[in-house]
Length: 180
Image (tube, rainbow, N blue to C red; front, side, top):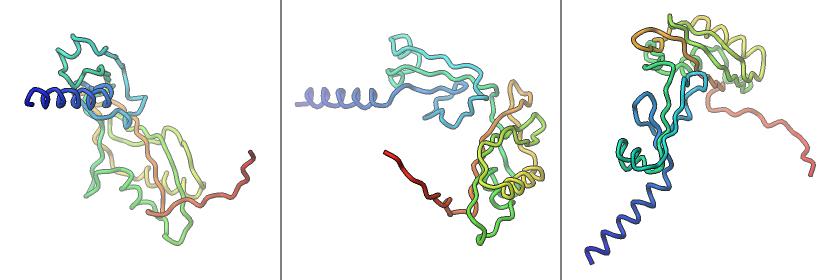
């Protein structure tokens, strides 16, 4: 009976591992996902096969292979200012947009330079020029970030900002016709 229980546990464990997918390692640290990393910040990606050598080096969690991601920096840039540790939250409080105004959205790619200054790299979406101008003003007046570091030196990094105001609202759905 004890042997049967052990076999069942091993089979269940192997099934759980195989459903997990590959192990992600970013700059030497095991992470759950790499979805949050901007493509511009990735220097190199190496894929290790699910073989004996990989499992011997990385452990049984690597039985589905390992994806090694090397970033352009060792330490990511981060924003911290007077109780704010998230730049989007800071912008939401800094942009003057009344709850009585319609819901608006802006999606931007921003760059944080080696000095911690933020600039807009690309406007991905803006539902109105008025809202975009207010977000641009808030970014221009924003305090500096702690820049990303590579080998102890400050480097430029890229980040995505998605802001929808008023908070908790949703954009109106535009009427349309669907042809089949």
